[in-house]
Amino acid sequence: MAMIEFERVSAAYRARDVLRDIDLRIDAGERVAIIGPNGAGKSSLLRTMTRTLRPRAGVVRLGGDPLARLDRQAIARRLSVVPQAALLPFAARVEEVVGLGRLPHEDPFRGQRPADRLAIAAAIDRVGIGALVGRDVRELSLGERQLVLIAMALAQAAPIMALDEPTVHLDLRRQVETLELIVDLNERDGTTIVAVLHDLGMAGHFFPRLILIDRGTVVADGRPDDVLSDELVRLVYGVDPVFVRRSVPESIG
Image 1: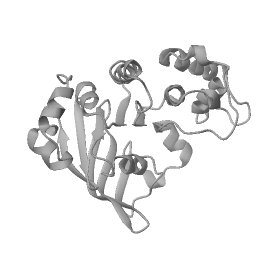
Image 2 (image 1 turned 60 degrees about the vertical axis):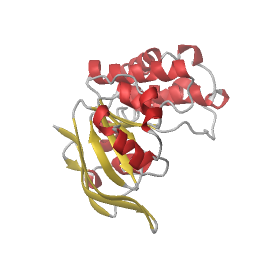
Image 3 (image 1 turned 180 degrees about the vertical axis):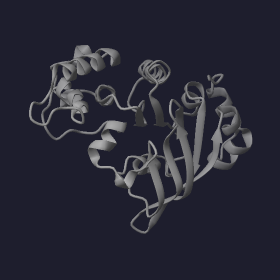
Image 4 (image 1 turned 180 degrees about the horizontal axis):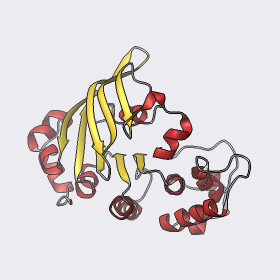
């Protein structure tokens, strides 16, 4: 079953085109990394997928339904989003932020139910941020905030999780632990994963499918060994492929 489909999608910020004629399909249970140089359109692709950026042409489908016809709650029940860690302008404890992931499921009149509280506790435990409970998120490091946002998306329990640079503020150990968690969510829970990553080594090791974006178009889509070929690395990144080979472990999947 196709969970995400792009059919001839183009998008722009005012007069600046960021996506051009994208055709793409991601099936249920896939684990996909979107890679490419700065300004290539990676985050724009993710924003179009979540309707934060509306296409000026083409159709995006989520679970077979046109995204434009779904309301925010319907989208949130199908897809959770982990943005890059941001500054929060208000005071909130860690568990309250994680609890925001339950809003699509809460009774609008009764609020959180026991099942919601269990989901919040389970997400906090699975991400390993129990020691942060009770703290104001504004006092956390950027890396700690990133983990809180991942826990929030996990509590949302959507069948698709989209992540924009989920390891960007984390140290090396936390990067590996976070990507291992993402692999576990995909393989054990069946969550469809779409992640924007800059680190080609991490992408090639933890994701069996890579989508290479450059100048708003899909340049390559497939296994890491094919997408990170010498020819494509030279063409898109403009560097000697030896640097990529040294950083990319043997791919999995």
